[in-house]
Amino acid sequence: MLFVFRALSILPLWLLHPLGWLMGWLTFLASPTYRRRFLANAAQAGYGLRQVHQAVGHAGCMVSELPRLWLGRPVRLEWDNEACVEAAYRAGRGILFLTPHIGCFEVTAQGVAARYGAQYGLLTVMFRPARQPWLSRLVESSRHRPGLDTAPTTLAGVRKMLKAMRRGQAVGLLPDQVPPEGQGLWTSFFDRDAYTMTLAARLAQQGGATLLLAWGERLAWGRGYRLHFRGPAQPLGADLAQAVQQINAEMEQLVRECPQQYLWGYARYKQPRQEQAGA
Image (cartoon, rainbow, N blue to C red; front, side):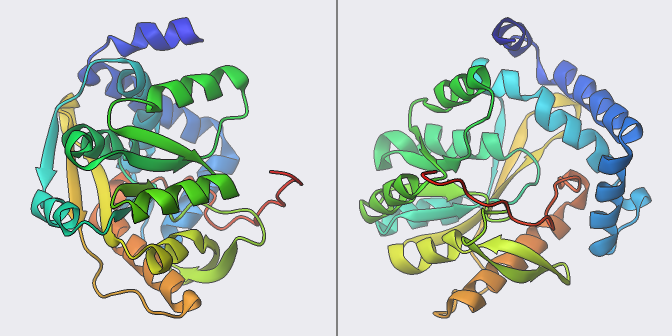
């Protein structure tokens, strides 16, 4: 599989994305479970298939572009509202980047790390190690690039992110990822209770860092990506449950900015798994 990844990494995005588009639709048509979840999640947010059908293809693109992003040459990036990122770095309090499952979240971290890592230090992103050993090694090695570091979804990883923020560095995570049982709250997401991590809110409250919302828009015809940044509508409340709900509301707003690139097939409303002892 590593050979396949390396072979695919030399292909341009204008070829990889159509391959992913086809893969996305084949999965949608072949898997009734995936299709039902996709349609149900979109309907929960008020969208029908006609409005978000492009998201079927974009889900496949998210997979097909990984070899290029992990092992290939840098891709073309555009920046939207980069001024707020620069201001946050100059403030020196650290930055907490929050990104939902929309567009290309891999390239958002890469772009920030490449542009600001040398001057302001590493960007540390949280990730859940893959279950397959070969894939886990590939993911870990691909994300250890100049300006970019990783933290596992463990207590040690949380401590690592807090230390980075207190040094004035930036960290990032996906707050709409369903956490293990005991690490979240049942909070509304598109008017339905979803088990939501408290980690993002705790980091924002304890670290004292600037909170920024970010997402990477996948541009048409393989032209690269546009990175979007902005601050929250209002400061997070001191109450944990309120802050978690605020973050969910911000994620909803980001999704509504481009529902055609949201990962509607993600099992956002699933029951949390029980964390194994020692994990």
